[in-house]
Image 1 (tube, rainbow, N blue to C red):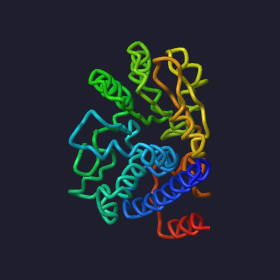
Image 2: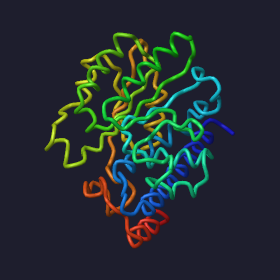
Image 3: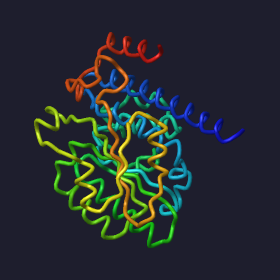
Image 4: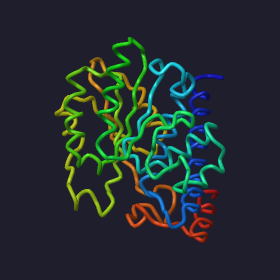
Length: 279
């Protein structure tokens, strides 16, 4: 198979993976019922997570060797529906386990709680903590001289937290070239738009001023995302990917509709969404 065909095949596989994740998100949200779920902010991350999990699968192949593999941290822990769906697709647990989300005795909670048996390596959800955790991992990996990366997925609303900026200042000073942060820039947070609540202004300029390499992409374009993940810089700075996304991506009723940040999915809405996804 020539290189062009390989790229087309890779793109198709990731696209199929992303479509299945959206179906799994719908299934999980429907069964959550009155517990509801963070629906919109999970959908905006689907292509990002699909690319990371498809391209860097070795971060789960060698669980016995904690350092010598790529690592993933979902800093915006409330977006866990996409994360759980990806883990299920990789076979860490049966698909019907998604139906237990937020139920008593389930390990699939509203924010990830560490459970390495099922692929959940870090407890996250207190916003602003994931990047600092990723910095510690990146430092450890470099000290052990492993050629591996740490991926940290943040929300744009999460960047309201001061701890994010403390971490953003620290990473370039330690030349953490193996650290890749991704911002899910869907322009909304729980109670409104970023502009209304805490205007982030120009994210690219902010992170650039802290000393990061910056790549800005369409966060739903698989080719752009893969190019961004693989882009090399001739320096030792960490990389930030600003992924411009649509909250609630994939369904006409939820796209750019912040009511679906945290809302109960009905059977009718579920059926309509499945029909729309399969068109």
